[in-house]
Image 1 (cartoon, rainbow, N blue to C red):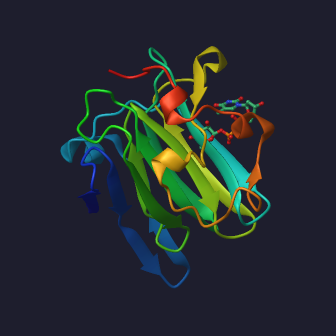
Image 2: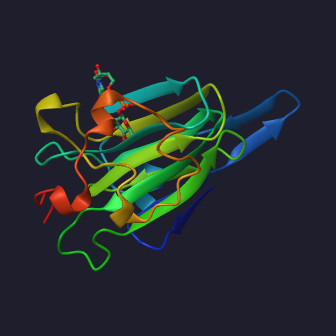
Image 3: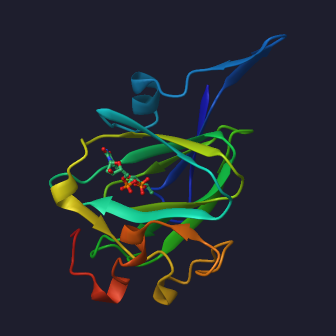
Length: 185
Ligand SMILES: Cc1cn([C@H]2C[C@H](O)[C@@H](COP(=O)(O)OP(=O)(O)O[C@H]3O[C@@H](C)C(=O)[C@@H](O)[C@H]3O)O2)c(=O)[nH]c1=O
């Protein structure tokens, strides 16, 4: 049993797979290719990634890979919690430039499916937060792209200010959306 819920941008989906509990704890199939396909989610994941962030208020993103290395991502939190954010970068989309922000935590184990054509990032809400995600294209640093997380034009309500956030030097100098050349059609 899995539940798939479309968010305000319908290609972005929240996924809850069933947790089978017993006296020891729970067991859960977090990804099963044919179960996802039955729900219309056809992705060939080729790489799993994991990151751990020490502090609350660590921001990673907003990232994407340019075609032909664009990635769909299936995100979940193993420990801690995040505010997960996606921005629609598809120029032909009615929701171009709009974002979705959802809380993901290890309590519910809900997963976020981010299609190709979106920038993705998150802010940790707890210390020692571990994020795990599957991607359907390999890492291609030559095709790395990004968007400045605190771009006021995006109007994302982050839980931290730019002064408080823990951000990598690379992420601090990413372009705003109005400085970004078209990436996705
Ligand atoms: C993303 C990635 C990074 N790396 C290396 C590059 C670098 O030396 C180190 C850290 O990379 P970054 O600073 O880009 O890591 P990080 O900021 O955590 O990047 C990630 O952010 C989130 C929001 C995403 O959506 C991911 O797709 C990815 O872009 O890991 C890989 O070897 N493989 C990978 O797939």
